[in-house]
Image (tube, rainbow over all chains, first blue to last red):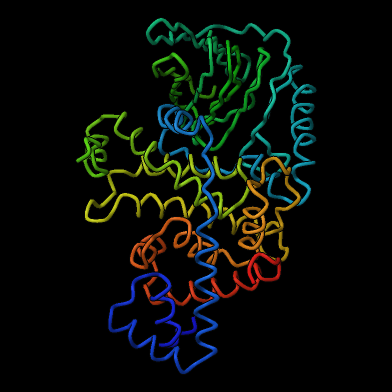
Length: 260
Length: 181
């Protein structure tokens, strides 16, 4: 880093209004005998005055609500993680490619399970997936119900039902929200693998996955099924948190069986 | 006199379990933080996401906040780091000239405002992120050299040197656009 010359340091201190009386006197003396220094002082003064005319932008109206909802629904350990939108959004051409990526992921899942699923993107070499659309889904396979969690907060009453399929588990979430509701599922990524999510409701939602967390927001009633598999013979737990418009935050957990 | 609780009181309240106390801090700083991030990355959607991330990280790491420092310096530091990390990631993936490689994004998401504001932002995106951040903190947030040194974790002399070079570059770019004589 180049050191600032004494003259430039004085000019800058004066421009920023932090020069002492003695420094200002010294600067006046220097400027009186140096046309180039006077020009420099003039240019930086003009820049400062000009930038002072640029007004600030208003933050998004829902920013505070979004922050507070995320605080209520996201556990600390799971904040980090590159989401598909970020990865594709910052990759050259990624904004164009993103819908195709979503379509490819969903399409592959249709072939495997007969559902429009969002599958954690091993085929893309990614550790996280995000999408921005609700899929139209058929009915889920029945399986055996092995657990149920009532998700209540005030007058809000929802549920999470755990079903054992052949080699996988399914959690059916029934969340009759009237407005925007943020939901997150937190789990131990060493013990559980999320296979995919099917959304049976229309609506503008966004699902994000990273190691240890799945979260989404959606306006209106939500019916989703999260498919997952245990990685280890030992059982584990998945925590469900929710909060939203007119819904005081709530949480609960489901015990998950280990791998057979 | 004001009845508004100071930042440290709110932090203490939050650590004591009062979530509303943190909401007051978010309300208080959402404008400056969002604007600082927006000036760093230009894209409104990204600025909103990064601002949310910054507040979320602050909340999750609140117990680590040292009250001998100013809360605003601490939250600015988190937000600036979020922005700089984002810019680095984007530059790795878009090895184009400067940070203006994001010009192909949808226009409605880019910082537009007035024509003058857009030109200023164009010029800001053409200087390095290290220079841009000192201009943003000094000119748009009126941070002192000391505050900037705390926020960026570098000595004050480095701040002064970067600021002078950044101003010269920015001035030249704005002259080239005809915005300054």
